Length: 322
Image (tube, rainbow, N blue to C red; front, side, top):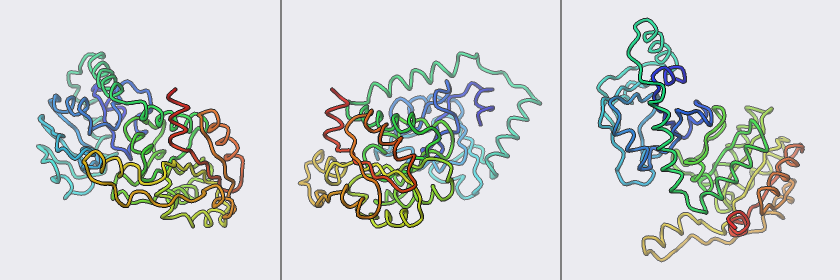
């Protein structure tokens, strides 16, 4: 994919689970922002869109549920599932096949039959403009949560971040560009299941024991699968669990308030996660600043047992935004 994009100077938008296929900082990487206006405008402006292995579904293209994603140009789709080729958007050209093999064949054909290529400065300036427009939309809270993710990546090179349905994960889906594939995945790309993050992180650590694995989960979500801390302890899997604590289901509460709905069922009792973590045999710490988080992450990476790092939302915002 990278070779094809660079040959065509074509901007690339990745689904959330495809983060890392183009590395962070690549001049043709738009990001995973197909639900935001600037990226949508760039896609609508394209003469041709090549969609590879994507459902074009709402969890990547319409998380705002406004129906605003559209492809006006010619659509070419590649998917290993023939039925998927006509779902959500009808392709002018539909190719049933393995993505890697199909992209390789396209690249080979371009070498054999060279086509006119855009100027080298065609794609990158468009990407830069889109990214600048999107960056200007992020408020202080989003920037603070992006700082949290940046701290994880900077402190633990090669880390896998398994996310739950929680506010920093939603922000990261828009702001974070993974350095390599298979480094960022979360439940918000499917059914949004609360509690997914912890068992997913345990599975990731079993599959990739040499890589640091971080579970990014909210206080509400963690209570769905809290006993899995014992599973990690018994298996001696040093997963790192970052608990974003806003004392409830903050995102759901926010949407209720925004729609003049009286909040109900969004303020569950918040237990003492530090005490619970130690009771399960984990190490436990709090962190209120990026520096404190980095130190806690380094200590956690050196342990043979899981570590729970709790971040109070209000305290983090107060420290990082000031």
